[in-house]
Length: 478
Image: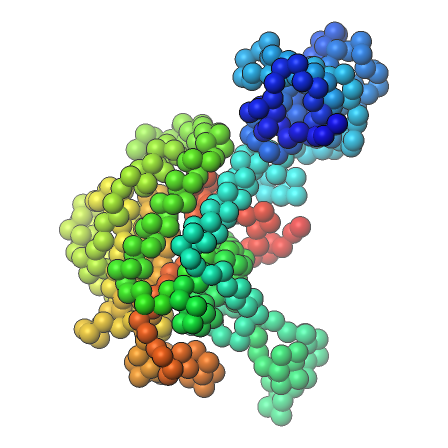
């Protein structure tokens, strides 16, 4: 017989049909005469109930059926006698594919803390919560590729190993084949990177943007979707050392075109989630409500599905950074000294400021533009006031910044001057500057942190719970 997935059985199965399912045991309960076994194969949040008449099966086999064990079950699909499902499988043959010792298997049918599950990340996919999260993550990755393919963008694989620091931040992981205890040294006693594998210092990438621009200035519109790395010693619920970024770059796009694309892109992904992931969204929404039921009402999150529909049905407000500073300075939290961080023109806005603008003032997503150039990267298009750049950040409820981008500086003279001001060696970036020497055009792009977005659509509070194997300071398990 051909194995059917539980999702297909629950959606399309017909009573009276012979059916084969292979899956893992979530729970088993029963009486002297009958055992009820809940199976899940990962294809859906829902389990398939197996009804096993104890007289038909060996007593030893039934004792071996514990939470976590893998089974193959053949039987007749029948109308369910209980609530919660339309069909169940009356077992005629059960094969134990893999045992799970109930004394040792850590994922038992009880409530586990998220911290405990992070410590057992190799098994946490088998829980309802993480099954839902990673099906959602897959759906969003598929939707991203689908969106850009439909728009005529080309998927460009930018390098993971690079000699450039796209952000100028310096928080990069070094890549080297040197013996760390005995590297070859120069006459000055420093590591001689000319003898290293690449012949120069190299790092894991912090962004595919600069290489993405090279592709856009020939192919027109490209996007990258790959892993990026930041050696930032940060133990927060918002930071990872390894994460995934989506970075489109578009020739002939100005800042308005860039904002239009970002808004359309985010709404496409949210619409896809609502149309294709309802069961998982409903489960995750219920989980979030249960988690927050003891909080004061004003501190509770918006219902998950309601939050997604709120973003989908809102026109994103577009204001400048300067306008945002004025709004914040006239706000009650500022006047009552409720903000933890300062609000002054020239400082980078913090999450508390971004959330105030979205959740309290405008009550819809916000796109901020024209930031002070002193707090932004060297490649951003400089405005005529010589104080601001054509940057944009998209701000969402409950999470703050979700997209950061800009129109890129197309003028070779201005770009070289800005690099000199920021001590970025032009001779090492000759390949990037060539795009401004030969056929330079207006162009733009942005970056979406994939885990930050998955956090938003799943309602998970910690970014470590939306990536399979989180890499954080002092943590590289699995």
